[in-house]
Length: 174
Length: 145
Image: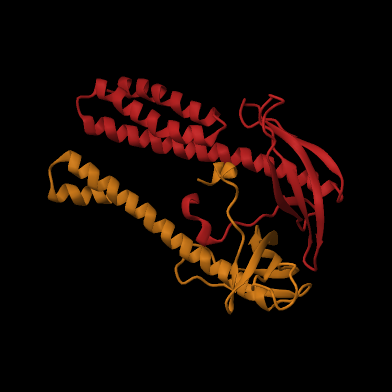
């Protein structure tokens, strides 16, 4: 029994790694339940109890979802830190390139960033910036533009400062 | 798990037990998310209400004490950086009045005061002020869901 569960652990690791490596969350989200179900079906072959197979599938899906969220958040945090860093060094009207590179072949991205406004205030200085995110090497790939804000922290560094949406607009985000 | 245990007490059918367990788990998650949203809304309302009374360039203090301890009690300062309103002739304004704000969340980390700054928008909704920052573009939801 122990040997079998070890083999299963290795089998489970494959979809988890696939999920962690995939960059497009929409793809991962749809792959999560599928791979969970696949594990359940696969387990059905080695255990006659369909409930155990089903429960293992659901558990795997939860693990994939949690891992996918973790990696996705890390990738986004890296993007945000790099863009905020560039914004901190720039003045309005300037444009600069930003990029992020990971050791794993996931999440690499680059683009341009431009400071559109300096927001001076009694508390701290913030900047409004427009930036593009390019995740593909294809030159014809779309170059979506977004707007955000970064603020100077008390240690002098710059951090992404865009606050969360109104709770009434959380709907599908949770 | 508690759901499954409770269900197992009244039925010996494993599949039914599993179904009730998963249903209870989904309900529990939905319940936590509901309360989390309620509690966080109270924090947003507190900041928005404070911002409503602060003029451009002024500084106000916001503070929230939660009745339900899902989130920590928070406080900080805020300032209004500009008024956002439609550029229409006086008298024709449809009533949109918003403010761009910078607010701090003041905490203590490793016995040292720590202050994080964020930006948001608030808009007047009748007689009160409400948080008005919309959700991120769906293409940027990745890490949020």
